[in-house]
Image (cartoon, rainbow, N blue to C red):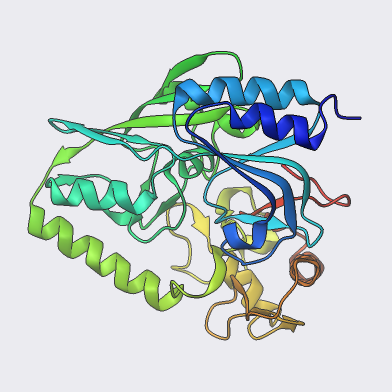
Length: 329
């Protein structure tokens, strides 16, 4: 039972500066899939000074709470989340020489565009990856040979009690992983990147090339989370599975999850208003009429097919919110 009722919690939160409070806010408005029922409260905070008191109050209130970013990689249940959803929305960007420091609430594309405009290389291949900087660090986002951790030097975060800093080496980055995934109640505040001086027009051309590729594969208006499943580490696959993989398919030590899905006729498969793209087996989207329950059923069916055919499990890049029958972050 919550210690504070809804009205009392709202009154206390409203006293915190730089905080915006929305009651019964549909999370479908804040997720890339366009799916999800309401949060009891959606709370946006824009300064670190206000974040600490907000975290303390929400914890002491007895309500469930959840920290999210831009909602790019979230599957929220149709019932929503019966608690407080908190977002840190600071977008400040500062440059000093070859170093950029950016707030965790900024779009990742803001970091890319600022670096390219300054003639600094190292993150241009992250162009068009949707979502916020903080969430990209949390999940160690990457594409086309670059990971967000490659050029990161320091992360500032709030552990619920105080502001702390980690150097890159402390973040534990690996494929689609950081140590922040072990601490769902920590809030990334800002990150600093040390970039390399480069040829401005060449960097802009590369970023534009990536934009065109991603916009064709994942149109900005498409209700999707990009690729649903993580690629697989080739060396970790059973020898019998390795022998079935075509030569030249393995890149960077990984095998595209899409290949395994293609072998089990995933393309074009659908469940209600949730569909697998005809042109990309690892792209699942909401056609505008879908529900979260249909998305979950479809994902489970694809995993079942791949396990039946290859004896291996696919792992989602997305994370679940508000489901009682699966791990929710």
